[in-house]
Length: 319
Ligand SMILES: C[S@@+](CC[C@H](N)C(=O)[O-])C[C@H]1O[C@@H](n2cnc3c(N)ncnc32)[C@H](O)[C@@H]1O
Image (tube, helix red, strand yellow):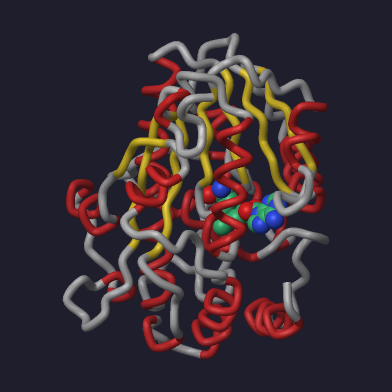
């Protein structure tokens, strides 16, 4: 992360220390899941999410509201947080269904790319012979494992943390951790692609393709374009600080739009709904951040895709 982002992150925390190596983005996603879990009309339940939040902040929230984390709070007073909360909650539901469909179709190897504080290995009732590889940086996974051990969480399936940087030789680390490249894989890149520049996402997708046996699939999401400060509704100083983190971290993601085009160019077939459609289906309000009626509105598309048969992949015909 750049110094500007780190300085903005410090502003958000206002003196609070985050655990070493745990970024705000992973914590915000956990915060949204903790908040969703507290609702009576929740879209899913993730009881461990609150443990990550309170332990990261070093506070106890028993019975009370979640502790505030910059703009993240339960009182509806931050337009920015309303936008992020809606995004994180709706996409969690979409990817839960994707993963459950994949195990129903007999795929037992799952790789969570940029897994963060995701607890699907614990909460989704996956078949016992499922293996879930959780790939993220050492700081995030060390904190996660410590909290999981402290609360005595035990996955009923095999969960394999893989500490690596997805810009380095992560395929080698994944293979060393036991990943089986001849077995179909269910890949998930949730909340990840925006941290990569367009050329990096192309390379990344090709690396995923090379590790994918026939029958593999991939899900993820990305924005129509890079975010600008003017896209983000600001309610106060902590919103402003997070908006700066958000905009500085956004490296653009894939260049081709819609996702079906980007996927097709790399040998995959798939597409998916706009976030706004997902929110409508879930009966949730569309936040100002994703207001589709604004000029040059920021749009986010979720997708799931299947790997094409070998002869239908770019550059592989007649080999
Ligand atoms: C927005 S969080 C999403 C986490 C998780 N998928 C979720 O939805 O809760 C992005 C995650 O990607 C991880 N990440 C970003 N760039 C990475 C990289 N180059 N290598 C490994 N992990 C990365 C971050 O550490 C963070 O945990």
